[in-house]
Image (cartoon, rainbow, N blue to C red):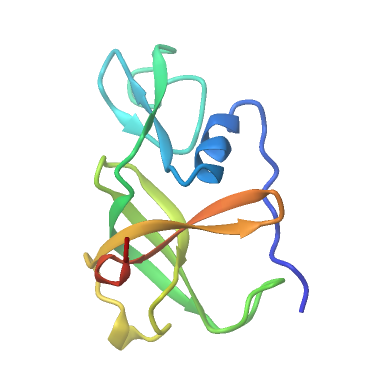
Length: 136
């Protein structure tokens, strides 16, 4: 089986990837309107201000939507879950749900999730697992 695709960091996304490598989910917040947002960019999508800064999010989220993919992408074993999660801080992101059977009986909309990180080459990628599955 081939390896999963590895994201390529850009200068604008480097703080995000450095955080992931350190086990932290970093997103941005606008200092003008206080809007937290994701995906990384140089200005606020809400008000347009360029007064934005990175912060470490809690890593808590809820399941907003998902699909169970039965056709494996490179490096994946089907079936697996592709999901949109809503972070506790507000932004949504697309990710994978792990640590749970890829079956509708095991996935509940609004279920609490917790981030963990999956190593792909030199990059760590945030994935989410049911919050009750996380151990310290």
